[in-house]
Image (cartoon, rainbow, N blue to C red):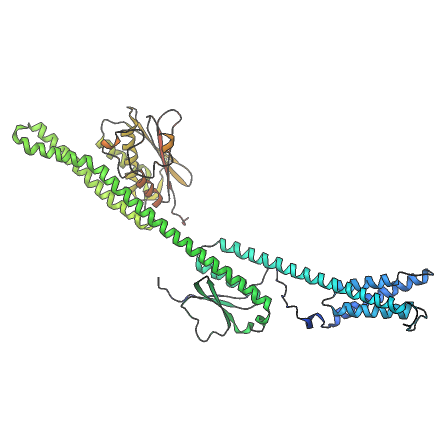
Length: 496
């Protein structure tokens, strides 16, 4: 379907939980000095020196100085980024132990027996502890980033599941990209380009396997930020999820289209079977009556001839009504929008349908119960009348009882329920799930094909009600007989 270029643009959307900056691990970053971490490190070392001096003044032999400084190095490595502060703290710790606490105090002396090995060991231990703590911080930071990436991907997937059209998918993806790159992004479907006056830095193709859906354009002002490999990887992940969502949506739409086509073909097939079934009896009756008149001529009495002509007339009228109904039913294949709904008084529609049935079956009894208050609902009156006629005639033909058929209307709040009940043998349980699937003899009557009055079939009745956003069901009554119930909403879907 041809359509104009539709580009989805989004502003910068503030993230509820900002993603941490995904810096790369270049060596120079790990050894970069900053004033604040440096001052924090010096403060920890001053406190460690004070604690060691206090212990040294309280105890004649103080062997805990090295442990206190090692602990200080661990603390510094825990609260500062990179390696440089821990290494500096390790060196200062070794120098501090030698200057403040080794004899002679307040002087440097690395020549005493055992001191070089002791100081070297302290330096190595301090550097190793600093390195381990720094690596631990880095791994914790990476784990946090991965967790936030996973959460962002989870949120993106949940938002995709809440929509079912390509434009909404692209809108959501652009919002997430805007949070990542802190700038506007835009999407253009395949074979559609942005105007030349739109400055862009990079184009990210939205494609999966060999199918390309479109392109995400990133504005020029974010080019410097895109030098960050972690940021670019995050954006590519979002674009990949968008491509998968668009592919899934395309497959779902294709499946729906095929399913609708299959249902339409099934309905046409059912309609053809219903026409073949329902037209057989009246046509046979017309042919037989007309042949009798032609062959017997004046030999027939006036009363017999009149009755035959009357039968021909009634069957012809029934065929005309049937053809008109069939023409109306064919509108269902064009979808619910093709059904012409008008507000109708329920009591009048029921009275019209029951009146037609009584004219055709004057010897059959019908009991009608409707609410006292007036019920007004939108419907195609002729189609709903046909449903009532079809269900009532089926009850006459297949119930095999002299008891009256009951037609009941109930106010169900936001809908109206119609019931057609007979007092026959009911319906076999194995047929309950498939009774609306096709046309055939009613399971209560093996000879049902011999009767006129199967109407347009139960499957077409269901199609009519679906076109009205209604439902139809069947159940066996507790005492005897079958109950067909269909429900119509009082208001149009999407209207108040």
